[in-house]
Image 1: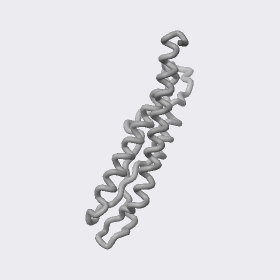
Image 2: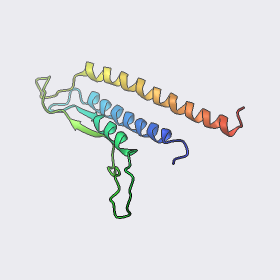
Image 3: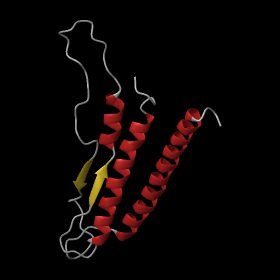
Image 4: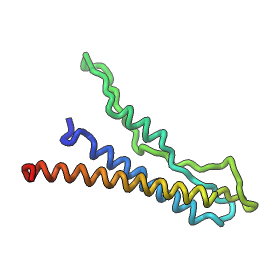
Length: 131
């Protein structure tokens, strides 16, 4: 059992995902005019799958039974979008889409930070004895 029920760890992983997504979007925007540059995207499906399977551990009734645990490293993947080409120079960055994704990701990141601040505030209140 973890001290805070795993909430802070999950928030930390979510912040890492949001940071990676923000960096990927920024790279796409920076390369909007680069010939043959292909836009990249951070895949969330892997994050969700890892979070779902991470906390589920089967009960072992015998010491020789294999444990079920998630041993993967990174919880997200950055994939290149190769199927499209929007510009005549082979570049497929859609600046409007990237700006919308950036705004959405910034809102998500800020919500995570607010939740983490609330969690730390609750811990601080408990440490101070409710004052």
